[in-house]
Image: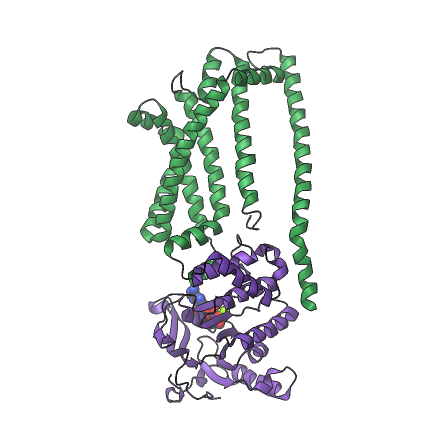
Length: 279
Length: 274
Ligand SMILES: Nc1ncnc2c1ncn2[C@@H]1O[C@H](COP(=O)(O)OP(=O)(O)O)[C@@H](O)[C@H]1O
Ligand SMILES: [Mg+2]
């Protein structure tokens, strides 16, 4: 009857959406590949024209250095070192951010504390904290983990808290209507409802952490034996191995792209896009 | 018009006794509703009818335990109402009352697991049954954002009924729907109520809807909301187009629009106490 005709378009929508999305993704992908090829050609052409491998190695020389670096295992080991430090700092930052956000959503004091701390510390560039970190922890991994934690903590806490606060009143009332306990209410209602902002915070925090780490390694490179990608770039610059410097930069870009495309976009596709929550 | 009284229930399901609700405090305080006294017996469908801003939603939230009471008392089965709970399941006007990250089945099942403490299998079985009763079996595994407004409200209604609450609270659940869907959903709701004998507190600003849905209509004055009349809806009036319907509609319209706002608060002796 009337209902069947009213409901029909909506009921067929979910079936149509994924196919539509997939075709749009493929199309965008191809355009990007063409653009990338164009940029690589431009690089190759200009570097050959310049003819100074110390200033700008060709694209092909950089790719060769990249392949050799990974084949010899050095770049892989450097990347692993960097990622290990990154994950430690990222993890610590997330735990602290979760604690602060939970505190802020439970009490007025916690909320004021979070607002005060983020207002003061969020604008402070993580690298500016390195001298303090070196004083406290000395040269080594703990200093780097400390500044990465700082880089992650504030943006993640800020956006998660904003997410919690923007959960619609109706949804809150629905949760309370079921008589949920406070932990269940936070975990099963507030967190999924705030997931778009939480994911955005995680993504921002990751980008901050990655940049902070590379910058810190470049400035204060930890030690020759256990350094990360930043250290790899720093030492190769000193030895005028410019192709290796560019290979290090490409590695940073690749890691960033892979995490962004696989991890964050994948997580978003599996959750907030599927649930129609993406803003 | 004075208040049309009805015989006091000896053992009301819900009783409101001089309920007053305010927002803010001190000089800037706003009174939302004032001195509401009414009883609802098991199987009643009491409609709160009044213009926007007269405090209907506030009153419903207070019964649900979402909002504190500033004067008077609210009792459910003789006990003061406390925090919100699944004994008073609410259906709101807004379409965002479903959990977007759960499917239609998931929404109803989750409510049964948490609200009624059922295990997943039992909850799933009962959820499927109720989703079937509102005609949504074909979208069992769809996420809410893919549903039309009417379908979302059906899921919310199925969820509320599935928990078998003592009292259903409905705050203009059909107000954001198109006229055709709204009429259809009113009929479906009536059918469900008649099958289950559910007791309902229903908020609306539509006179037509009040007569269709309610067994009793409590009309409220504009802001701040005070009781104007409590009118039982005769069975004969429930059918649109009948004389009884037109008469009741006219009388409610007179109540709401008529002799404006100020002087119609009932003298306190006339109110009944449950
Ligand atoms: N959270 C609030 N804070 C302050 N005033 C409010 C709030 N909610 C409602 N009010 C006021 O209380 C009165 C009744 O509102 P409401 O219960 O939403 O009425 P209705 O549902 O009948 O439209 C209105 O005048 C409104 O402005
Ligand atoms: Mg309202």
